[in-house]
Length: 150
Image (cartoon, rainbow, N blue to C red; front, side, top):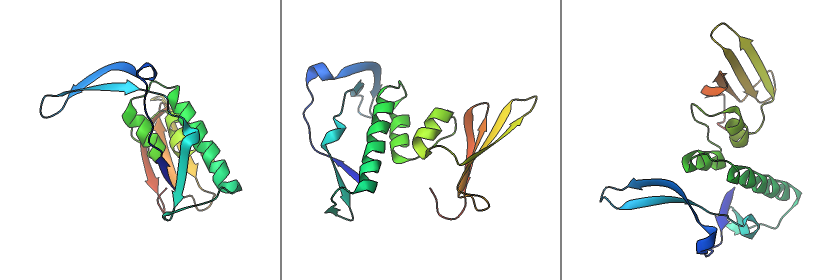
């Protein structure tokens, strides 16, 4: 699903400097800011045409709104937030980040050892799972797909 945001103007009082800066190749400074986005102004475009809202797209819209609201309450770097919005996970993601990116797993296998706690999150119904995510001590260590990628 492609989400297109309508252009909007930011008011200076709505923008907050995060305190992070960086330089580009031309030594120009970039400043990271945060701001509130009104998600109710989103338009959804599927297959290049506007689609009227049905119950499924309405539920997806509500899920997307909730995801944006959840992300807005975090102090996670923008790169992590963007990955979550795209449905990507990375090594080092927390369980909360993995759930926001992929949703809750269908099943969790937990192993406790002297080294720590290892979890295998199973996505897809047994006996044909679609993917696994492996955690070590609460952080994503790796993942694998079977068949169609998530």
